[in-house]
Image 1 (tube, rainbow, N blue to C red):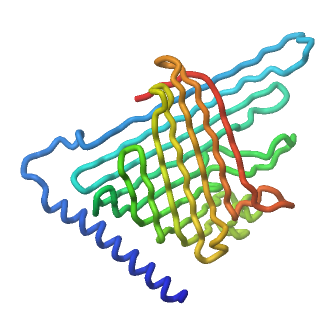
Image 2: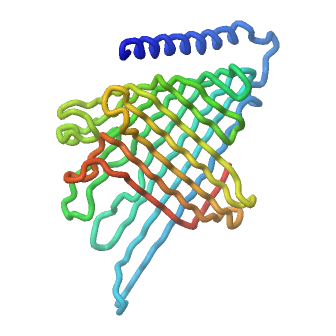
Image 3: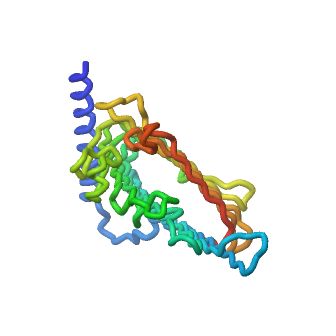
Amino acid sequence: MGLIFRVGLCITFIFLVVDLFGSVLKDSTQLDTISVDTVKYWKTGGFLTLNLSQISLSNWSAGGQNSIAANAILNLTANYARKQSAWDNTLDFGFGRLKREDIRAIKTDDRIDFSTKYGRKIANKWFYSALLNFKSQAFPGYKYPEKDSLKISDFLSPGVVFLSIGMDYKPSDNFTLLISTVTGKTTIVRSRYLSSKNAFGVDSGKYFRHEFGGYMRLIKKGTIYKLVNYQFKIDAFSNYMVKPENIDWDCEIMIWAKINKFISANLKANLLYDDDVITSPNKGSRIQFREFIGIGFSYRF
């Protein structure tokens, strides 16, 4: 049964690839003789939020520490739609720092998440789709609050790449559900030090870990009472070869409440589980949680 299942997956993969690229080539041979302004087929947008806080104390009897904190979130989208084709591109970037007088500046947020997805419509609201997703962070991360903290992450340590082909249900610009039985996942650990520690499931001395399995991505966007916007996203992956019942998932929710043209309240929360990531030496893999609430400058474009 295992051999038949794998052969079936390979046939499905080949069929989808041939169909996708065959459709692209067909379109390229049927271009209009009159030039078309392709700009009208693109929808671009995004938002930027910046939150700052500062505390300064001098002879304050109640105690406390001087500190300054900053957090930024940037989201960019560029989506193309024409005839039967749809091409969606998204870049999410988050970064935060906290500086207290007794310690060096520490990282509170660091996230790079880029996705590009091409789809070919085959029925009402359904697409054949191919997705490339890349996740990492830009700067080193350390285990706090130890004084001499050891590095536990860095750029491309880890870096996670998903390459997926499947079916995408897309009834509107605000909802998409991609389901794939043909997905490759590559975990990158560029740091020699972290690689030697078997970090993020990569074998000691190696820099890559390859997995093959099933994948699902759901994204839902919406508006509440005209002034509150939200985005919910969840990624789930099951490795066919090793413990397929232990599903890796990444759940994120972002909410923006508009106060005026340039000021908004923001909430961002992440729930994450990766069966290959040991969060505690004695307890193994555990659910990871991160949450941020702030009020600051906000701009949509």
